Image (cartoon, rainbow, N blue to C red):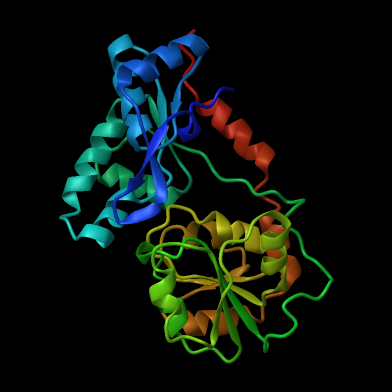
Length: 299
């Protein structure tokens, strides 16, 4: 598998979110790079500039291609710029309309896309590294009063972190992540530990040390961080919206409610082995096999 990713191109900062870099190139240049790879199948990972350029090339050459819908892009655009949601959905519909298949992670997102006129969808679930993300016996974050509620992810407006920060909770709140809202949310909240971005083993230790993982987003298509937390034995609390509903389902590994604080408190009682058992149903191997089966070969 060959990945033509942003690391091969000049990048610019995304407007209103400078931490994200957007790759910039022409369809012809990218097309020459694609042709040099002599691919048997082409998959467009996102609706960003590279994806658009690759789409133009595939349509011009008559190559079938698949796409994936990872992020509720129209809702994010509306949250940042307050534009009518029909406009970004028109772009999303145009982008995916040329694909033979659009891969989506969950049934609820698949249904939502079909309502918006994107019909050729197939399922591609997510996987989690079950060796890295695992329960741990060694003590960590011992200085914080218990119970400990953890958020992990981008610190950005679309993640609805304010709901996590505002909810009543008897113990400690920890935020792991970076993003454009970090300084604003951190100001005036000395009781919340903002620890910045963590990766690999250090990130896994934070998941395992928490008593409950809180997922306040209402716009994610899946929420891989929930799987990482569950794999570490940490129960999940969130809103009953697409993403959390699909990940948690009827597993009993989390509590979803409109009252996020109440969901968080109830989730504290969930056995940690139940969370780990649910995460084990999302292996990387199964995800990879599903992805390969969804591709559309043309050679």
